[in-house]
Length: 252
Picture 1 (tube, rainbow, N blue to C red):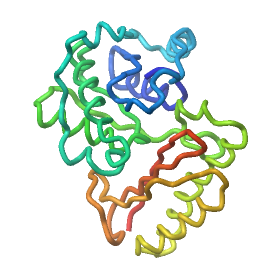
Picture 2 (spheres, one colour):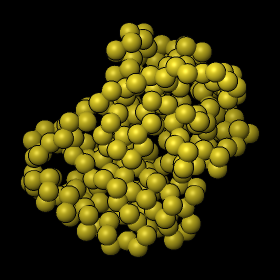
Picture 3 (cartoon, helix red, strand yellow):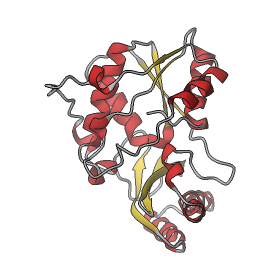
Picture 4 (cartoon, rainbow, N blue to C red):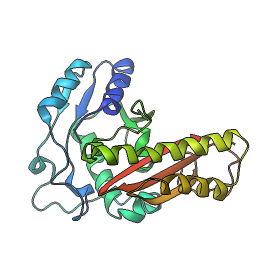
């Protein structure tokens, strides 16, 4: 959706490494925002984005207008089913309907052999994979690693909303995930024990309101009770008025 950072640019690098032509779509999609969310103030700087993409060897930028993407009488949307009803779906019930719809439209308008997504949006990557499989879309989905700031904060366009104090407070999200990794490496397998420790870490920061800390079998949104295999720990929290997500992969 623009406001590009190193996480986005790493996807361009991956595409350039594997493909003959790299195409980037930029579109702030209104249908994935709820009326109370930040669509109007979402950061937009096309000139900066184009300059950054040029430095990474992007070949084509597809940047349609809202009118081009959605006709005035647009009524068709993709229902993603149960995979979009948990985690993010609990707090943003129409979000993945908008995501799936716009991704499918972009696949139609700027067809490709492969599409690259970042793991920070873990559930989004699952939704897109499910949609591609269910609707027989002939495209290979690649999911690339989370890119973090030097201090550990997951890169996000919404980080620009944070004040200096909030930016420091937001570090408890990555710190809590790192704590979970250390506990699993140390032999802890009980998710409630790990969740309580993560919650204490988050509660130590002023102005951070956790919304969920969930443990799911990696590659799914299926909850687990103990860590006995690859497990994704997903977290969402509000830092001030800014909502951030992050996750990590651990293995029993």
